[in-house]
Length: 310
Figure 1 (spheres, rainbow, N blue to C red):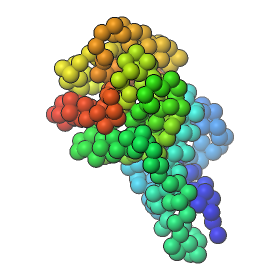
Figure 2: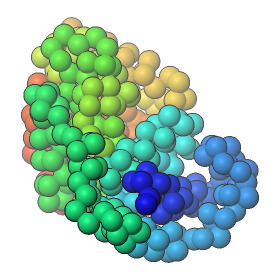
Figure 3: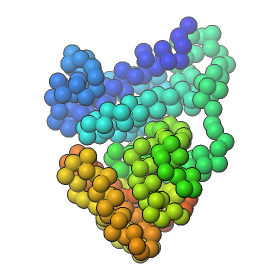
Protein backbone atom coordinates (compact mmCIF):
# COMPACT_ATOMS: atom_id res chain seq x y z
CA UNK A 1 0.00 0.00 0.00
CA UNK A 2 1.17 3.53 -0.72
CA UNK A 3 1.82 5.88 2.19
CA UNK A 4 0.48 9.44 1.84
CA UNK A 5 3.89 10.99 1.19
CA UNK A 6 4.72 8.29 -1.36
CA UNK A 7 1.49 9.23 -3.10
CA UNK A 8 2.54 12.90 -3.14
CA UNK A 9 6.03 12.07 -4.40
CA UNK A 10 4.68 9.98 -7.26
CA UNK A 11 1.51 11.74 -8.36
CA UNK A 12 1.77 15.38 -7.27
CA UNK A 13 5.23 16.79 -6.52
CA UNK A 14 6.75 16.17 -10.00
CA UNK A 15 3.94 18.06 -11.71
CA UNK A 16 4.00 20.98 -9.26
CA UNK A 17 7.75 21.23 -9.90
CA UNK A 18 7.07 21.10 -13.63
CA UNK A 19 4.74 24.10 -13.31
CA UNK A 20 7.48 25.97 -11.42
CA UNK A 21 10.03 25.15 -14.14
CA UNK A 22 7.60 26.27 -16.83
CA UNK A 23 6.94 29.53 -14.98
CA UNK A 24 10.69 30.20 -14.77
CA UNK A 25 11.09 29.38 -18.46
CA UNK A 26 8.34 31.86 -19.29
CA UNK A 27 10.39 34.46 -17.42
CA UNK A 28 13.19 33.90 -19.95
CA UNK A 29 15.43 31.60 -17.89
CA UNK A 30 17.51 28.91 -19.56
CA UNK A 31 17.39 25.27 -18.54
CA UNK A 32 20.79 25.28 -16.81
CA UNK A 33 19.83 28.18 -14.56
CA UNK A 34 16.44 26.66 -13.78
CA UNK A 35 18.17 23.40 -12.85
CA UNK A 36 20.57 25.21 -10.49
CA UNK A 37 17.75 27.15 -8.82
CA UNK A 38 15.50 24.10 -8.38
CA UNK A 39 18.31 21.74 -7.38
CA UNK A 40 17.60 19.23 -10.17
CA UNK A 41 19.45 18.13 -13.29
CA UNK A 42 19.18 19.89 -16.62
CA UNK A 43 17.70 16.73 -18.25
CA UNK A 44 15.00 16.79 -15.57
CA UNK A 45 14.18 20.40 -16.40
CA UNK A 46 14.05 19.45 -20.07
CA UNK A 47 11.53 16.74 -19.21
CA UNK A 48 9.40 19.21 -17.21
CA UNK A 49 9.34 21.60 -20.17
CA UNK A 50 8.48 18.81 -22.63
CA UNK A 51 5.54 17.81 -20.46
CA UNK A 52 4.10 21.28 -20.85
CA UNK A 53 1.56 23.13 -18.75
CA UNK A 54 -1.58 21.28 -19.85
CA UNK A 55 -0.05 17.83 -19.29
CA UNK A 56 1.15 18.79 -15.77
CA UNK A 57 -2.21 20.35 -14.90
CA UNK A 58 -4.03 17.30 -16.24
CA UNK A 59 -2.02 15.00 -14.00
CA UNK A 60 -2.71 17.22 -11.01
CA UNK A 61 -6.43 17.32 -11.78
CA UNK A 62 -6.45 13.52 -11.93
CA UNK A 63 -4.88 13.46 -8.47
CA UNK A 64 -7.55 15.79 -7.07
CA UNK A 65 -5.42 18.94 -6.86
CA UNK A 66 -7.36 22.20 -7.43
CA UNK A 67 -5.95 23.61 -10.66
CA UNK A 68 -6.15 27.29 -9.72
CA UNK A 69 -4.32 26.66 -6.45
CA UNK A 70 -1.57 24.69 -8.17
CA UNK A 71 -1.01 27.48 -10.70
CA UNK A 72 -0.98 30.17 -8.01
CA UNK A 73 1.45 28.26 -5.80
CA UNK A 74 3.76 27.50 -8.73
CA UNK A 75 3.85 31.17 -9.73
CA UNK A 76 4.66 32.24 -6.17
CA UNK A 77 7.34 29.55 -5.85
CA UNK A 78 8.89 30.62 -9.15
CA UNK A 79 8.94 34.23 -8.00
CA UNK A 80 10.80 33.16 -4.85
CA UNK A 81 13.40 31.29 -6.91
CA UNK A 82 13.75 34.22 -9.31
CA UNK A 83 14.91 36.41 -6.43
CA UNK A 84 17.17 33.63 -5.13
CA UNK A 85 15.13 32.70 -2.06
CA UNK A 86 15.43 28.91 -2.20
CA UNK A 87 14.21 28.44 1.37
CA UNK A 88 10.99 30.32 0.60
CA UNK A 89 10.50 28.19 -2.54
CA UNK A 90 10.77 25.00 -0.47
CA UNK A 91 8.49 26.47 2.20
CA UNK A 92 5.77 27.32 -0.32
CA UNK A 93 5.81 23.96 -2.09
CA UNK A 94 6.07 21.80 1.05
CA UNK A 95 3.27 23.75 2.72
CA UNK A 96 1.08 23.23 -0.34
CA UNK A 97 1.74 19.49 -0.43
CA UNK A 98 1.00 19.15 3.29
CA UNK A 99 -2.11 21.31 2.80
CA UNK A 100 -3.40 18.90 0.14
CA UNK A 101 -2.99 15.97 2.54
CA UNK A 102 -4.47 17.80 5.51
CA UNK A 103 -7.58 18.93 3.64
CA UNK A 104 -8.30 15.51 2.13
CA UNK A 105 -7.79 16.65 -1.46
CA UNK A 106 -5.85 13.46 -2.25
CA UNK A 107 -8.11 10.99 -0.43
CA UNK A 108 -9.87 9.94 -3.65
CA UNK A 109 -6.56 9.20 -5.31
CA UNK A 110 -5.36 7.29 -2.25
CA UNK A 111 -8.46 5.09 -2.29
CA UNK A 112 -7.95 4.36 -5.98
CA UNK A 113 -4.29 3.49 -5.55
CA UNK A 114 -4.71 1.62 -2.25
CA UNK A 115 -8.32 0.36 -1.89
CA UNK A 116 -7.57 -0.71 1.69
CA UNK A 117 -7.92 2.97 2.65
CA UNK A 118 -11.71 3.15 2.51
CA UNK A 119 -12.42 5.39 5.49
CA UNK A 120 -8.93 6.60 6.37
CA UNK A 121 -8.61 9.82 8.40
CA UNK A 122 -4.90 9.67 9.22
CA UNK A 123 -3.89 12.91 7.49
CA UNK A 124 -6.61 14.88 9.23
CA UNK A 125 -5.23 13.68 12.56
CA UNK A 126 -1.58 14.12 11.64
CA UNK A 127 -2.15 17.76 10.67
CA UNK A 128 -4.45 18.97 13.49
CA UNK A 129 -5.58 22.56 13.79
CA UNK A 130 -4.25 24.48 16.74
CA UNK A 131 -6.50 26.26 19.26
CA UNK A 132 -3.89 28.85 20.24
CA UNK A 133 -5.72 32.23 20.35
CA UNK A 134 -3.05 34.01 18.29
CA UNK A 135 -3.11 31.22 15.71
CA UNK A 136 -6.90 31.45 15.53
CA UNK A 137 -6.70 35.24 15.20
CA UNK A 138 -4.51 34.90 12.12
CA UNK A 139 -6.64 32.08 10.71
CA UNK A 140 -9.82 34.12 11.08
CA UNK A 141 -8.24 37.15 9.42
CA UNK A 142 -6.94 35.10 6.49
CA UNK A 143 -10.31 33.43 5.97
CA UNK A 144 -12.02 36.83 6.05
CA UNK A 145 -9.69 38.09 3.34
CA UNK A 146 -10.01 34.94 1.24
CA UNK A 147 -13.82 34.97 1.36
CA UNK A 148 -14.26 38.64 0.38
CA UNK A 149 -15.60 38.98 -3.19
CA UNK A 150 -12.93 40.58 -5.38
CA UNK A 151 -10.16 40.11 -2.80
CA UNK A 152 -8.00 38.35 -5.41
CA UNK A 153 -7.34 41.81 -6.85
CA UNK A 154 -5.44 42.69 -3.67
CA UNK A 155 -3.06 39.70 -3.70
CA UNK A 156 0.51 40.25 -4.98
CA UNK A 157 1.97 37.96 -7.64
CA UNK A 158 4.42 36.60 -5.05
CA UNK A 159 1.58 35.88 -2.64
CA UNK A 160 0.36 37.48 0.56
CA UNK A 161 0.51 36.62 4.23
CA UNK A 162 -1.27 37.61 7.42
CA UNK A 163 0.83 37.86 10.57
CA UNK A 164 0.26 38.72 14.21
CA UNK A 165 2.75 39.08 17.06
CA UNK A 166 2.59 38.51 20.76
CA UNK A 167 2.61 41.83 22.68
CA UNK A 168 6.22 42.92 23.08
CA UNK A 169 7.48 40.37 20.54
CA UNK A 170 11.13 40.66 19.58
CA UNK A 171 11.74 37.56 17.45
CA UNK A 172 10.17 35.86 14.44
CA UNK A 173 9.38 32.88 16.67
CA UNK A 174 6.89 35.10 18.53
CA UNK A 175 4.98 35.97 15.35
CA UNK A 176 2.28 33.75 13.81
CA UNK A 177 2.06 33.60 10.03
CA UNK A 178 1.07 31.14 7.31
CA UNK A 179 3.70 28.60 6.30
CA UNK A 180 2.50 28.82 2.72
CA UNK A 181 0.59 32.05 2.28
CA UNK A 182 -2.39 33.48 0.43
CA UNK A 183 -2.26 33.26 -3.34
CA UNK A 184 -4.32 34.55 -6.21
CA UNK A 185 -6.05 31.56 -7.80
CA UNK A 186 -8.08 32.83 -10.71
CA UNK A 187 -10.82 35.01 -9.29
CA UNK A 188 -10.44 33.79 -5.73
CA UNK A 189 -7.87 33.63 -2.95
CA UNK A 190 -6.30 30.30 -1.98
CA UNK A 191 -5.02 29.94 1.58
CA UNK A 192 -2.11 27.49 1.67
CA UNK A 193 -0.49 25.98 4.73
CA UNK A 194 -1.26 26.62 8.38
CA UNK A 195 -0.72 29.61 10.68
CA UNK A 196 2.15 28.76 13.02
CA UNK A 197 4.74 30.57 15.12
CA UNK A 198 7.65 31.46 12.86
CA UNK A 199 5.58 30.65 9.79
CA UNK A 200 6.55 33.82 7.91
CA UNK A 201 10.08 35.21 7.98
CA UNK A 202 9.95 38.35 5.86
CA UNK A 203 6.48 39.65 6.71
CA UNK A 204 7.14 38.90 10.37
CA UNK A 205 10.36 40.92 10.19
CA UNK A 206 8.50 43.90 8.73
CA UNK A 207 5.85 43.65 11.42
CA UNK A 208 8.47 43.44 14.17
CA UNK A 209 10.14 46.59 12.82
CA UNK A 210 6.84 48.46 13.15
CA UNK A 211 5.91 46.82 16.48
CA UNK A 212 9.19 47.93 18.09
CA UNK A 213 8.47 51.53 17.18
CA UNK A 214 4.70 51.49 17.81
CA UNK A 215 3.81 48.66 20.23
CA UNK A 216 0.05 48.80 19.49
CA UNK A 217 0.78 47.71 15.89
CA UNK A 218 0.69 43.96 16.37
CA UNK A 219 -0.45 42.63 13.00
CA UNK A 220 0.05 43.08 9.27
CA UNK A 221 -1.24 41.84 5.92
CA UNK A 222 0.59 42.04 2.58
CA UNK A 223 -1.27 43.57 -0.38
CA UNK A 224 -0.57 44.16 -4.05
CA UNK A 225 0.90 47.57 -4.81
CA UNK A 226 -1.76 49.89 -6.18
CA UNK A 227 -1.66 53.69 -6.21
CA UNK A 228 -5.43 53.84 -5.72
CA UNK A 229 -5.04 51.63 -2.65
CA UNK A 230 -2.30 53.86 -1.23
CA UNK A 231 -4.40 56.97 -1.79
CA UNK A 232 -7.32 55.37 0.07
CA UNK A 233 -5.06 54.24 2.93
CA UNK A 234 -3.58 57.74 3.29
CA UNK A 235 -7.05 58.99 4.15
CA UNK A 236 -6.93 56.70 7.21
CA UNK A 237 -3.47 57.69 8.46
CA UNK A 238 0.24 58.01 7.64
CA UNK A 239 1.74 55.79 4.95
CA UNK A 240 5.51 55.23 4.77
CA UNK A 241 7.25 54.58 1.44
CA UNK A 242 10.54 52.81 0.78
CA UNK A 243 12.50 52.14 -2.40
CA UNK A 244 12.99 51.39 -5.16
CA UNK A 245 15.43 48.92 -3.63
CA UNK A 246 18.79 48.36 -5.34
CA UNK A 247 18.96 44.72 -4.22
CA UNK A 248 17.00 42.18 -2.15
CA UNK A 249 19.71 42.45 0.50
CA UNK A 250 18.93 46.14 1.02
CA UNK A 251 15.16 45.69 1.20
CA UNK A 252 14.83 45.37 4.97
CA UNK A 253 17.24 48.22 5.61
CA UNK A 254 15.21 50.49 3.33
CA UNK A 255 11.98 49.54 5.08
CA UNK A 256 13.51 50.21 8.51
CA UNK A 257 14.71 53.65 7.38
CA UNK A 258 11.27 54.52 6.02
CA UNK A 259 9.71 53.66 9.39
CA UNK A 260 12.38 55.70 11.19
CA UNK A 261 11.21 58.81 9.35
CA UNK A 262 7.79 58.38 10.97
CA UNK A 263 8.95 57.12 14.36
CA UNK A 264 8.31 60.37 16.22
CA UNK A 265 4.79 60.77 14.94
CA UNK A 266 1.51 58.93 14.57
CA UNK A 267 1.70 55.20 13.87
CA UNK A 268 1.48 54.37 10.14
CA UNK A 269 -1.44 52.47 8.72
CA UNK A 270 0.74 51.05 5.96
CA UNK A 271 4.25 50.77 4.54
CA UNK A 272 4.71 50.73 0.76
CA UNK A 273 7.70 48.89 -0.70
CA UNK A 274 8.32 50.26 -4.19
CA UNK A 275 10.06 47.12 -5.42
CA UNK A 276 13.28 46.86 -7.40
CA UNK A 277 15.35 44.26 -9.22
CA UNK A 278 13.62 40.89 -8.67
CA UNK A 279 11.38 42.52 -6.05
CA UNK A 280 7.67 43.02 -6.61
CA UNK A 281 6.26 46.22 -5.10
CA UNK A 282 3.83 45.51 -2.25
CA UNK A 283 2.00 47.25 0.57
CA UNK A 284 2.14 46.15 4.21
CA UNK A 285 -1.08 47.16 5.98
CA UNK A 286 -0.82 47.31 9.77
CA UNK A 287 -3.37 46.90 12.54
CA UNK A 288 -3.69 46.30 16.26
CA UNK A 289 -5.03 42.83 15.44
CA UNK A 290 -4.91 40.67 12.33
CA UNK A 291 -8.66 41.02 11.65
CA UNK A 292 -8.31 44.81 12.03
CA UNK A 293 -5.50 44.93 9.47
CA UNK A 294 -7.54 42.86 7.01
CA UNK A 295 -10.65 45.00 7.58
CA UNK A 296 -8.64 48.16 6.89
CA UNK A 297 -7.31 46.65 3.66
CA UNK A 298 -10.75 45.52 2.50
CA UNK A 299 -12.55 48.73 3.48
CA UNK A 300 -9.99 51.09 1.97
CA UNK A 301 -8.56 49.19 -0.99
CA UNK A 302 -11.18 46.76 -2.24
CA UNK A 303 -13.61 49.43 -3.58
CA UNK A 304 -10.78 51.09 -5.52
CA UNK A 305 -9.46 47.75 -6.80
CA UNK A 306 -12.93 46.62 -7.88
CA UNK A 307 -13.45 49.88 -9.76
CA UNK A 308 -10.02 49.78 -11.38
CA UNK A 309 -9.75 46.03 -12.06
CA UNK A 310 -6.39 44.39 -12.78
